[in-house]
Image (cartoon, rainbow, N blue to C red; front, side, top):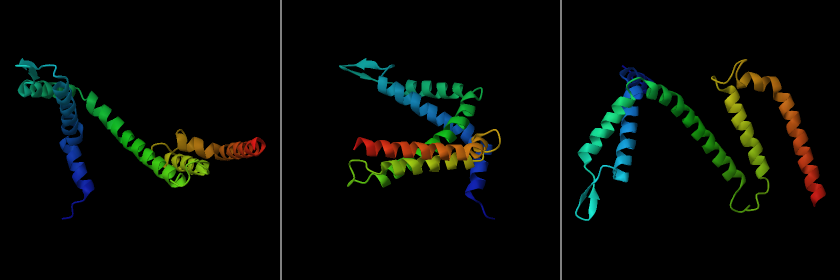
Length: 169
């Protein structure tokens, strides 16, 4: 019997790991850390304040369980974290392109525009070919319909910038 990562992830999803366990752990850790750091429930022992870790843990568990009661948090996490992952991927691509086109020996930033243009093209291509954004009503449908207008406007802007750069010199 072959078990794939997809099978494991689907099993975890059916067990509620992504809807309940991980949100519970995340909320618990954040509430516990905030209560510990702020020493909101600390008592004074001698000349310093000391947290009662048992009470802090009970409050963190209670808040975590109560927040999962009506599935608002689970639904919100199901929406925000996949998009957060996409945002991190775009940020990584941005940093790679800027690092590629702005090497240490080029501190003035010459030819960085080329990296920005390629980066914009990669992001637009990725978003337009992504299944959730494609189709007639999504970004992909809009992008396919107006691609030549975008290319022409880009060429006009590039020509204006080149001519302006030559005139300023």
